[in-house]
Image: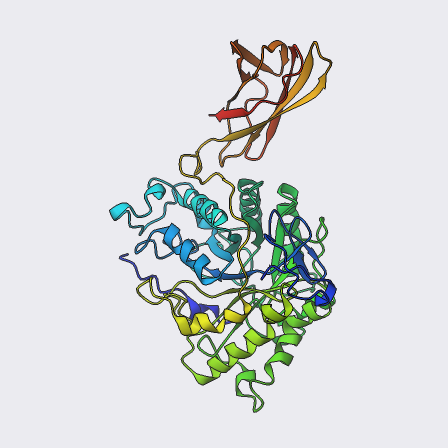
Amino acid sequence: MFRSLRRALCAVAAALLIPLGAAGLQPAHAAAEAAGAGYWHTSGRQILDASGQPVRIAGINWFGFETSNNVVHGLWSRDYKSMIDQMKSLGYNTIRIPYSDDIFKSGTVPNSIDFSSGKNADLQGLNSLGVLDRIVSYAGKDGLKVILDRHRPDSGGQSALWYTAAVPESTWIANLKALAARYKGQDTVVGIDLHNEPHDPACWGCGDTAVDWRLAAQRAGNAVLGVNPDLLIFVEGVQTFNGVSGWWGGNLMGVAQYPVQLSVANRVVYSAHDYATSVAQQSWFSDPSFPANMPGIWDKYWGYIFKQNIAPVWVGEFGTTLQSTVDQKWLAALVSYLRPTSTYGADSFHWTFWSWNPNSGDTGGILKDDWQTVDTVKDGYLASIKAPGFPGGGSGPGDPGDPGGNTAACTATYSVSSDWGSGFNAEVKVTNSGSTALSSWKVTWTWPGSQKVTSMWNASYTQTGSTVTAANASHNGSLAVGGSASFGFGGAPGGGGVPSVSCTAA
């Protein structure tokens, strides 16, 4: 609620990952190494990694892509890699990155990035999506996961509904699908927060498609899963349900009667936002029993979803300047409510603190105004609910030297369908892994032996020695983002195995 009070001050020159049994029955010390690998899914109130180990999101919000800077803030002061390294060193394992739909517009470029003294060198010349590629790629190498947050339709301000006259629902969904396709196969991005802080007149379960946020979340979530069924779908609450109001995006009371139902099971994570008096006053802060009344408040609005084992709950935003005693008590109570990692491991609430940035007008950040120094008092409040990072590694479209940005890129996989000794048949699948449509592609490989292509279909080829280059046919050179084409061939003799292949695109 009252998000307008929490706009960023754009100060520029313009789990513990502990495998647990159901409901935490397995002791916390029975930890397994490197939990968190791959894509994630849900099981009851927990989030599980690709191998079924529970994980805990314990992260930070790094905003800016949703503002007129069209990029995360602070790059006017520091190199982006140094900030991600610092997040990791402080024990944050996930970054929530807000954006607006403006970053998808042609011609949108980031501003206020300092390139002096070698800072941010690999971001020069990139558009906003290209910079996002770099951030995602480096975060993954550092062992951090990323949740992309559709924060606003445009950089002008927060909207009550998921659409506006200028940014219709069709644009919202198209851009969500574009992100799902852009990072498909790059499991650093584990999910998408569909829209930030829906509020009045948004409803939950009222059935009016123009304002029913739950129905809209189902439409958008299914569209995303249609592109990448491995992603988590993070769904925030509304402001008011059955006449009971709370924070913008923080009221999930309607889930009990009207759960979000998606085409792929075990993908919904419900997200609440909760704040202190530095953002706005609420009646519960002046209750004589405060802060003892707060667990009951949180139970009512969103905590029951976790406690009844309905689904995981992620507090996607919470923060405060910590200047008042009330706020200090609130944060201490909330941290306790979210369940200490040492006691409960990953059988806990998930969270990303607002914010990394110091220039959030009514909360401040983990960093102080110099964009270097850590607010150790604020960071210290979160110590008991932090969790280790995830397995690092992997490359993606944002790697320096890789095409990335709005340039063409492709990948290819080679498989042998049959091998009878004197000959063999094989197939190569080409996928557009970049962020723009392809008009043509070529695939090259080198066999270790004397193999020769005897025939090829759906592509043309040249062979020099043991090196083959296959080019698209006239009918399959054009590939949409995320699209694929295949070609096959026969060769002789057999026994060549599966060579490494490379793909180039235009």
